[in-house]
Length: 378
Image (cartoon, rainbow, N blue to C red; front, side, top):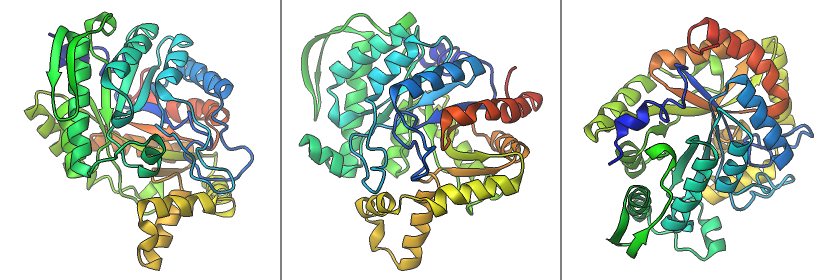
């Protein structure tokens, strides 16, 4: 039987000793996480993804985390309208890299668990154990309607997600078993090969509701949660995050798990604060794709809130679709990461206006500072 402790020595640490993990989030999607019309925005096409992954691998960045997206948000750019399916995307990137952990983001209701289990094992062998699973139980009913899939109520999604994950893990660890549940009834299941090296892929989830949080802490190696802020990276409310992180880790231990706690953020890093603020305003105010943003609010029912609340959410979605803004100098960004590490965060998934173009400066100026602070290994 594969146990959590065995995975923690390698996979859960992403095969390195970096205290604060850094990954990139959303690079499989056109425009990434910035809902903007600027011409230099991220393309999301394969050649750019491949170029980025190789640069990340050479630069020691820890992971790539894609978004599971099937349909764009409209607007002038059809925000995130061009995306790659994430398991096959991860497989290609794993074949081209040596150290990088690459996740697939998978909607449980859309993938049969036995097919998904086989796809992920294939990716895992290609990457010699560097594939990770971001399991999503679903929220976007517009996309589910496109597939003709019943989205179920909120609690039902997590019940199905639990069965889905249970079936996959049994397929990864057992032969010749039957399964009878509320959502899946399977007979004579046998799948070979098993995951690479006799260990299970690193698994993460970003559930924020009561059911979602409980699902993550019961099942996963990593949980992504949000950080409150006032729109400035210099005022991220990390004090309120400390008890949330401590409680999550204590609850995970009750299930026999050691869980890493992560968040997501958007970065505009320049030599001076003035340059960073000006470019951030250019991207997120002067050239926001307001049509796509308003469609997103409509999909989530946020357009029906009082006008002041609607405007608050419009600005938040223009500012990286809800991630923690990290806007400032290399010292500003590095210090925020240091504060996050002290608060108990294991790491962060970052998005840039153009990931590949901005990575060299980030590596030289921000990651170098984190190495000197002892949060990253050279």
